[in-house]
Length: 449
Ligand SMILES: Cc1cc2nc3c(=O)[nH]c(=O)nc-3n(C[C@H](O)[C@H](O)[C@H](O)COP(=O)(O)O)c2cc1C
Image 1 (cartoon, rainbow, N blue to C red):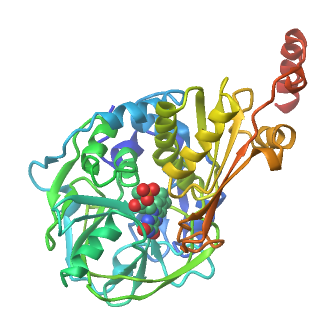
Image 2: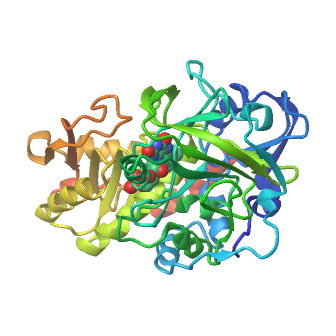
Image 3: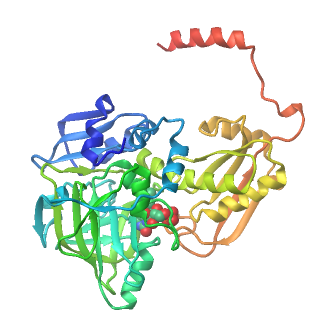
């Protein structure tokens, strides 16, 4: 079933959404909860927000496979395949009929964003509150092509936002608008159902389909769009909140420090958005996402991991599964292979590291290893990998901008670790008789109860 908006999705979660009746502060307290919740915990709705009577903040929305499977109308087991199947069948967006819910309440040229929205402050040394889960939308002035992505935005005084534009397509669109000496119209959609949100971080190169059509494919129904009120951009009509504005040409200001998805603070000299309007639904829900959390892991697992798995399976026989390692901001992944000769595994490593710009290390193991269990992966490395023989290094790679070890330089490097078993029975895992295991499972379940 395709959810038409965030509130429809939340209404269907039942016990998988926990309402918090106590008042919580968007300054640090909510981020601390979102950071602390394990991936499998329910989503949370803060029904009372310090300083914002009547406002609500929802978080931990997409962290679990259970919830993502629900958003895609599939099972947890079929989540990756459903993502790939849906993504391959793009569905073009349509114009919303009638008034857009996202524009029920309109604030033109607001001077103080914080008086309108409970934007979270996450970490102790963050310079300001940051928007972390906004789908930023704009059109390329050079080609007319739509672009979207998740970009962090720092709340500045005077109705301005600093925006980190480090990745295409938006970084390129911004460069094109600056070359023409013009501001870049943008809209930031906040509070989307998960499939549409995910589309903003799906990879789609310059020749790829419109990401809004990818969003339609992912959710299995077209996204309804409305025209923004003060800028030339189309926005999801059923978003909870839309911020409209213009990225000013030639302006750079300090943006940050901000505690990033890497777990480190990162500052930048970044472009600035002048906000022209904030529109929202009646009783809007503000969405929170804490950097370096299970929510981020899920976005990267699907948009980067599943994507890469599909590409590798097309290119190398024997690729079984892939897991982006949680907490690594998409810098590390583990791949499982079956009956894949060593020279093919080395080719696989080179492909993976080159296909994914962000990926810095990849470990390849056999399919007798549970790639979602760090103990098993560490065991494979400890017992099947020989550093001198099994390390593939790529030098002169672009360092990812938020990676403190290479910090956006061209002196980055990447490595692959081939931890597949050699031939011979010495690599067979120890086993226990099935009957003994069955009995043990029963007792263990009782002991743990
Ligand atoms: C949680 C999250 C936060 C992100 N924040 C930023 C950001 O602040 N600035 C930026 O340029 N890109 C950011 N990105 C990446 C862009 O959204 C990127 O354009 C998008 O993921 C496209 O994929 P690719 O860069 O992997 O090709 C973020 C991605 C995720 C998943």
